[in-house]
Length: 162
Image 1 (cartoon, rainbow, N blue to C red):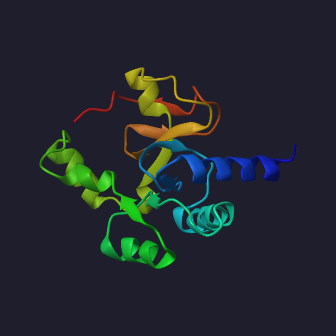
Image 2: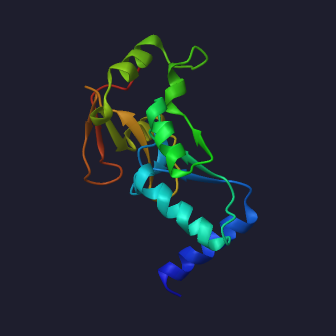
Image 3: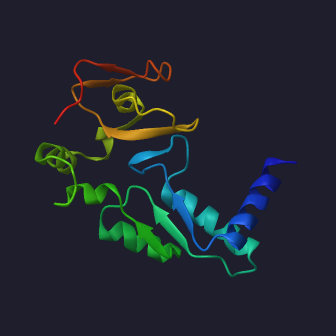
């Protein structure tokens, strides 16, 4: 069976048995698939496949990954998204367990300040993620990112704190 027929079967299954589908791009914070497409590339592909698999009656499709401001949400609505999931954006809320210094680091960061890495997972010993899944973190003075091997993908000078 070819890969395209497997993908087609999966899409038909999702469209017929799930009340809602989530489309997450590689911009997502936290843990996710390391090598995937961006949300704005992936969403139209998934949406078209769901429409085709359900004779034009797809389940709601929700977008996630790297969304923080209204214009991004509006852009997805234009593409036909049924809803959005915001994650990292809520780390700035008073209910978040983040410290003030962690919140300030998020506010000061731009998109080039984040890296996909397992470094913090190794430090905190929270391993066991499926193959191909890693985390997104802010680059900082305590982390030097390298792509040598999974376990050697980090050099920590001090344990990340704050």
